[in-house]
Image 1 (cartoon, rainbow, N blue to C red):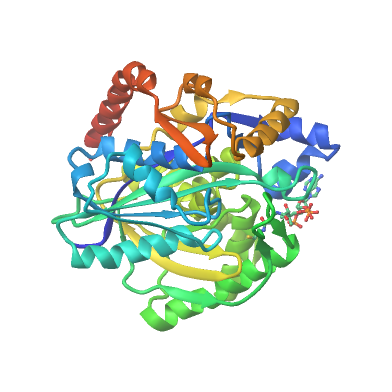
Image 2 (image 1 turned 180 degrees about the horizontal axis):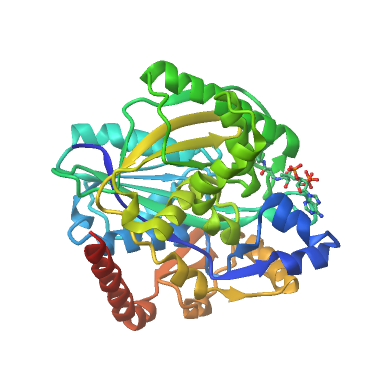
Length: 419
Ligand code: COA
């Protein structure tokens, strides 16, 4: 079987700020953030972290988990709306940091939060033509809004990496439906002009565009595939967790279910279990649908095998895609809880300082050798003579590889036991 998702991995920033702290600092009732928007904490990048290092870390973990995969990567696509250069793609940096083969097609694509799905669908088709090779898809973003703006509390950051390829049997993660439902329209709901470092958003309008895109893409899916069977789970693009509740509500009503109690119970069973990681990481734009998928894997493990999931991807501007997937026998163990436990909590003053520092790090002359000290596998040292400088942190590899291998072995052993 060609073009299946074989495995996935996730990386997240080093720091986080709680929504209790943010609510107090902004003079907002904490219920608005935690209940209204469904956000509990948000990931914040430390110095030395950017979209490239997040992408490299997620992809590196994926390649380490899959022995022998690196040499077979023939396609590497990065989906992002946080590009670091108008010309040079993030995939070029990944190519050297991950030591990918020279015979490898590399590029970056953008369409707001939809880019990852576009990359994934492209990789599936490529896989049909190249069954002996593997495609590496990385979605990486840092969600950044103006401070004190309504979007501020929905910020976050992180990367998701997917390995796409061929499987002879059912030893894969997810097989996607042959058909997708699509809906595109030209709207200004969320965008970031070249001269701004934060996005502009018409918040309520963007919610409307998302929901309209959802029902139109769903109808297109049913029309193209003839499939309107009930699925076991639903995962949505998650700009903030309550958006998944709104999406589920709208979809069920569109399917003819009106009873709010029935809809709520269905939400608790088929959607809520997957949302926990999005609640504590925040919006990761292109990867947020796939983070929800990862949260489900972490919680349900091998119970998911043979189950069917609906996936809805939305990118402002806009493009919507509704498709389904059937889980194979290889449900990824992402170690998400360990990752989250290792984060460092910071207060709002420190979050604001890091927010400012990350913007300064984008300027020429920001290069700082000392940043090599942060305990991450890849470090962004800043810009020197207009070139972004990254370093593999050899100290990290020496100190952490052993514990990482132990963790991988434990996770693999857990997977085997559960089979
Ligand atoms: N306790 C519990 N809930 C509360 C509350 C409180 N004290 N105060 C407000 N709320 C609820 C509101 O009723 C609302 O819920 P509802 O949407 O179910 O009606 C929710 O919290 C948000 O409040 P609202 O006043 O609508 O928030 P806002 O206008 O400040 O901004 C967004 C909300 C989503 C528009 C804003 O965060 C945003 O622009 N985000 C970025 C864009 C985005 O993510 N778009 C999504 C599509 S891509």
